[in-house]
Structure formats: C-alpha cells, structure tokens
Amino acid sequence: MTLRFLHASDLHIGRKFANIPQPADGNIRGRLMEARHGAIARLAQVAKDKGAAHILLAGDTFDTATPSPAVVRQALAAMGEAEGVTWWLLPGNHDNLRDAEPLWDSIRETAPANVKAVTEAAPTALDDHATLLPCPVAYRAGGSDPTEAMVGMDSPEGHLRIGLAHGGVTDFTESGEVIAPDRDRSARLDYLALGDWHGRMAVSPRVHYPGSPEQDRFKHGARGVCLCVSLTAPGAPPQVEEVETGQFLWTEIPLQLHPRQDAAAALAAALPPSGRRDVLVRVNASGWAGLADRAQLDEAIARLGPEFAHFELRAEALGTQYDAADLDQIDHGGGALRIAAEALMADAEADTLAPEERAAAADALARLYAYVREGAE
Image (tube, rainbow, N blue to C red; front, side, top):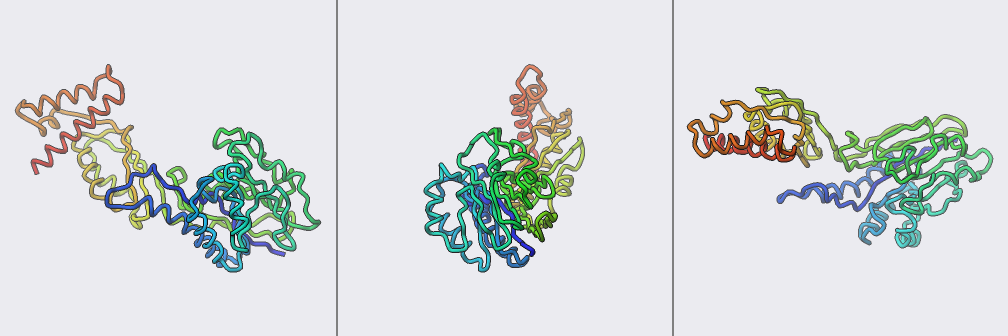
C-alpha cells in the first residue's frame, strides 16, 4: 500500500512582476509570467516520471482573487491534459474563499474531471487507503491557526492521513496566523503538506514546505522544486524527494571589493558561467573602490548585464576612495571640470550631509570620471 503524490504550492499564476524593470527591447515580465504557467506542465511531467497519481497544491495557485478568465481557463486546461493525475487545489491567502468566491465557484463548475477544488474543511478520500484533511483559507488574514480543524477530522481505520493547509509555522506575514509545529502529532497525520513559504523548508520529517515550483524573488537563492512524497503505511516515516521544476534562477551575489582591485575581473568571476538568459542577478557590492575601479565595474556591468534575464547592482555598501590622481584624470589643469569634481568629492565626504546626499555626490563624481575617461578613449 504505497501512496505516491507530489506536493507543491504557491504557483501564483497570473503574477505580473511589476517590480522587475522591463527593458525597452525585452519582455522579461512576460517570460516570468509564462514560466509560472509552464510550471503546470513541468509538475505533470514529474508526476508521470515518478508514478504519482495526485498533485496537492497547498494554496495560492492564483496570484489574486480575481485572475482573468484566460488565466484561469488556460491553467485548468493545462491541468486537464495530465492523464492519470488528479490535481487538488486548496484556497490560500491570495486566492482565499471570501475574496475569490466567484473563482472557486467557477472552478467547481467548469474544471476538468481530474481537477478538484478543495473548498471545505472536511475529510476527502484520495483513494481506498488514504484520506485528505484539507483546511482551505477562508480569509486573507484570519488571525488563527488554519490547521486546527484537522484535529477533529475523522478517517477510516487504517487510512493514511494527509493534511493540506496554507500558512506559517512561523508568522511569515505578521498576520497572527501561526500553525502549531506539532500539528502532525496532534492530528495524527502521516504527512502535512503546507504552502505559503516560497522557499523549501522541512519543519519536521512529516511537515514540509516545498516552496514555489517557479521562484519569484531573490530571497531563496535556488530554482524552485516540488516534493515527491511516498507513504507506505500509517505511522511509517514518509519518503520525501526534492525534484527541481524551476526555469528561472534568482540569485544574489556578494561582491567584496578593495581599492586598485580589478573590479571587472572580480565581477566576471562571481557571475554564473552559463544559462544566463534564465538567471536574474542581484549583485551586492561592498568594501571600497577607487574611481577607476568603479568605472571598470560599470563598464563590466554594461557588457555582461544584458546576457542575463535581469541584472541589478546594489552598491549602497560600497564606499569610494578618492585621490589626486583620480581628479587629475578628470581635469589636470584646474578648469571647470576640476572645480566640479572637487565640489562633488567634498560633498561625498561631508559628514554634515545626509547619507543619501553623500551617495548622490559620490555617484555623480563616478559618472563624471567615467564620461571623461570614455571621451579620452
């Protein structure tokens, strides 16, 4: 009596990624949106490869309570194409029952036969040997443990008990909703499938977050996965396998610099060497750099950045060191450019100015240096 199923959550189909700048000649937002829809087919393929008969989606299948009809219909149609697999969709906080009532009514009425909307906190048979104990999210912020109802849910003698819920074992959103970390024991669960946390997390051997199958932020630093779970008998420990499903990698890279270092070479060495079109990069530069170093870094970013799906530099922690030789590179003769450079340097080092004003002056001086250098070449 082995039950094998996939556990996934937080697809957030329909997310628009308005926080990602859209290049004039690119379509990164569209690519990211399409990758979220594409996760459906990738999950279906994993289920086929692993012999899993069920895919449990632990909340936030859709990014909002009011996704467009096309987003919903296309997602359900893609799920319907997965022969031999039943999808179980749980309302989460983004697509909760109250705000998304028309959505769930529509899914119940029009979804393919292999797509089940789990909208009641009541035991449901997965097969002849397993019972699903779902706790759909009724309100976006309910302020209580969304898994409490599992404790009182009955199941036939000898059945596997599988909980399905959406929320935080720690309070991820300051909503006041915290799932009891021992819920698997108090509700006699063989496995508790959770959603809400977008990164992979094993709370205990029986309680897991898979994270989103297609990542959408820099926080977690790895491609998305789903979990392939095998249960052999009530009380037996689950076997949990991570299977990569993500197309895009969101990665933060620390870049520690020091003056007179080859900043361009340091950046190139830190970046992923391949697959860059599907990588979003945030470089967190720190340490110190001279004006020439900053110019090298900016030139390297202008050259290498377009190879990536998205590239951004965060240089708030990177200080700039100045010397007379740098200013001489701008204007050796004391002309207008030299006067402007000295004024910017004074502002960049002035303790009487606000940090953002000093940073703006330093950035302006670095740009002036780069412009003059470029013109000289």
